[in-house]
Length: 290
Ligand code: NAD
Image 1 (cartoon, rainbow, N blue to C red):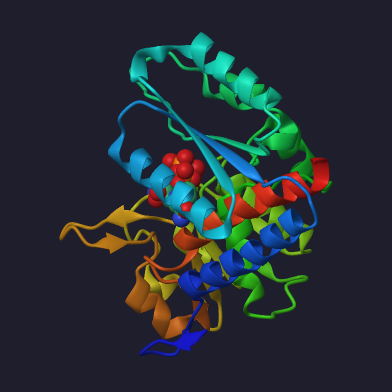
Image 2: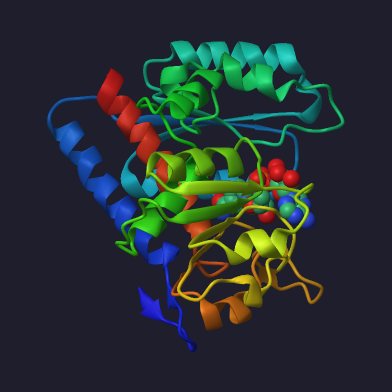
């Protein structure tokens, strides 16, 4: 943790993710030295979305860094659901593959059923933690792969060493990949959790009550700095461009720094943690099932 120009301490996701990858590298080499197989992650990219290409490239680079084998499959946007499901069936049966990631979103202009695709992945190889069985396990508090961004948020929150029990968390956003799972993880730490979304009547009042704020909306600087309760922890998942084209989060960073005790920057906060948690899910799957 480093101190920003104002009172808040930065929760440094870049530094923590480097530490996570270093630890995984050591785990993977110990596994291989003990005669076990190399963990493998299959990435499936459908279509030409430039952001998705960058995300998948970064995930594959991280595989290389930690010694996880990477099996990459690129399909044209018009490939179709059936062929995509055939590929997933093959990857489910491939012993070299311990984690499977289908990069979302699937091309909107073709008729993909994302839920069906995610459910086709073997739940034991579900590196993203989006399979309905694993999401159900999270709901029930049973061990299962946890979605990567929420898992990264919790690792950053743990840097504060706060006793979270009984504290009030406000999660802004209710998506299946960030908002809902992060709310369940906070609940599992005995926090009192409020989930806000696009129909919430008075977001400012809700956020003002929060000891911990998680913003996962996708609207640049929606959460105003003066909504942050003094001493609160702010975890900003959003990745947006503001009107000047600058990368910003869902929280007005400099204003929030005046009130928060801890805050994640954008970039360099939650973002880098997601890839580390993806590789952790893959290595954990290899250790559990192979
Ligand atoms: P999403 O679009 O699926 O969900 C957005 C949520 O925000 C919805 O639940 C919606 O109800 C809520 N919302 C929209 N407008 C609102 C408003 N005015 N007030 C309150 N709530 C509102 O988005 P997502 O996939 O959950 O992603 C959210 C953000 O996090 C995006 O900026 C995305 O780029 C980013 N993200 C970052 C990472 C990472 O690795 N750091 C991973 C996933 C998503």
